[in-house]
Length: 91
Image (cartoon, rainbow, N blue to C red; front, top):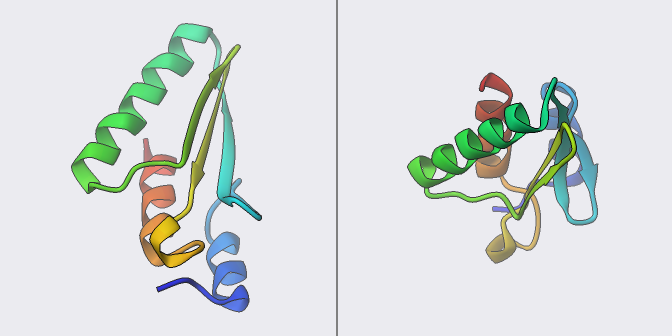
């Protein structure tokens, strides 16, 4: 079920660095090297497979990785997206 605006704001307050956007919730992670970012993106991909919930966006840039979650079937951000974001932060 899609989170209400208030639920989303409360969830974001508990998610360090994540921002609410029209397209879901997103965070950009910064790394010492390009290879470190790629390794992190691979961990995110493996987590997604394990959870059977995949990021809408996983963009690898120069020393940066941007992760975006949204549940399209629900039409917005759900608790599953928030849980995935928590697990990504723990990586």
